[in-house]
Amino acid sequence: MRIRSLGVIDDAVVELSPGFTAVTGETGAGKTMVVTSLGLLLGGRADPALVRIGAKNAVVEGRIAVPTGGTAIRRAEEAGAELDDGALLISRTVSAEGRSRAHIGGRSVPVGVLAELADELVAVHGQTDQQGLLKLSRQRQALDRYAGDAVAAPLAKYAGAYRRLRAITTELDEITTRARERAQEADMLRFGLEEIAAVEPRSGEDTELSAEAERLGHAEALASAATAAHAALAGNPEDPEGIDAATLVAGAHRALEAVRAHDSALAGLSGRIGEINILLRDVAGELAGYADDLDADPLRLSAVEERRAALTQLTRKYGEDVDAVLAWAEQGAARLLELDGDDERIDELTAERDALRAELGGLAQALTDARTEAAERFAAAVTAELASLAMPHARVSFEIRQTDDPEGVELGGRTVAYGPAGVDEVELLLAPHPGAPPRPIAKGASGGELSRVMLAVEVVFAGTDPVPTYLFDEVDAGVGGKAAVEIGRRLARLARSAQVVVVTHLPQVAAFADRQLLVEKTNDGSVTRSGVKVLEGEDRIRELSRMLAGQEDSQTARAHAEELLATARADA
Image (cartoon, rainbow, N blue to C red; front, side):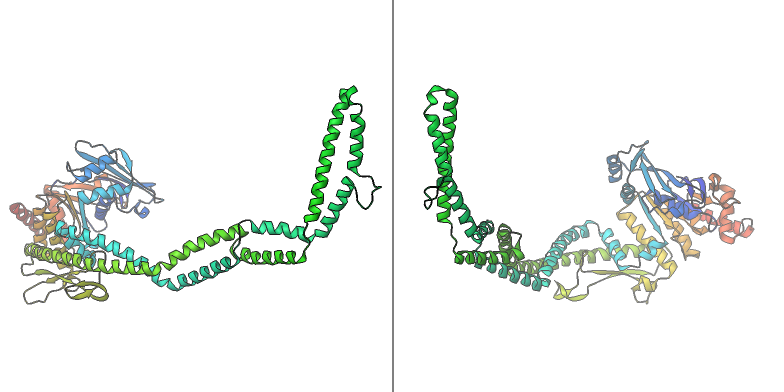
């Protein structure tokens, strides 16, 4: 793994052993940057504050061997990555402005792809993970992970039923909590529909009535105009001496008819005058009929205005015109049917909810039973591991309990609270010595004991759900003496089946490593390419002496360091 411009590291190469690698160095030398670098390669959060001051970006490049046939290599190939002799070349760049880029096998990929690969390739644990183990939700997750399909299968069925129940409950709550609003809406719709039905408007009626009102309002003027126009065209019976247009045109037609045989031009004009004469008589007849039919009855005008007022009341409330009012009525009737069906829908949803709650109770019981069985095996395995970590009398157990809730699901004659992961609260208990009552590890475990419990849990996981690489960042915090030796021994045993990388301050742990890396700063406070080196022979004894006594040249510390190395080699 090559690291450039990350934290105190200017440019360094970290070569990890296939077995157990211990990373040591003075406090602040940059050991944790090794963990941070691997975290970035595996999709960790990109913090621009990690970029070395004065640099434009930080770059981490790594070569990771990938198990053949696993989901990691399949996911990498789906992303377009190419393998290099069975290994993936991964790089991650973080700019000082906060932008992040990732590449796998020469192909740019979303950072999320790195995180997907991490699940199968590396298990990272540090002091924050120890604190996380104190949370009940994390303890339940750890138990479920250990149980595997025994819990995963019933949990999947439970989760599906839970999601359906939540959806139904949400819909039911929405309908019932809005019952008043929906009732008010239904009343408003009924009132509007009744008001429209009472008027019984017809499509286009408002336009028709407007035209009729205009005609009736000017009936006298219209009749007078029609009569005058008729007299001008066809004559006035009361004035037989008057001259009208029809008489004049008829005279013109007769004059031309007498001579049309002598000139085709006059014959054509005579025909056209004849057409005018016919048109005049038709128009005169229609004017006479219009005047006779025109209704000047004020009662009819009053009725029309009343009808128009009734329609106007509707258009003010429900639409711009009568057609819009009729459209509102159609939509309102459909909505009213929907609202009136709420009671029936509530009954349906309530019945379905109760059935799902009963089903969920049965699934929750199956999930609880599976967890209870797995908890006994898990606790026994962790207890056995603690015996090899200088806690021979410690006992680990799980308490699986439920909380009463009248709104919950039925479980064994009780009504208990439920959530997306079931009804169980899972708590890891520790009895550190005989006679001590089991207590939650958050209250009953010291820092050193918590570190060993965390390591024991991870070792148990390694036997059931192994990954190729384990990274521990000061998982031995708060531990010393014989317990530290046992932790080193156990990590060495774990390294027989997986790659183990440990950032540690403890010489007892570092002595068991197959390779020890020293991270040290230069005089200017940076870690350069030569600042991460493999310790062998005399150099390793000097570093272990420093870790033991703070003095590389102390003869007592050297003797102790040599003894630690001899003990580790003998154990191997």
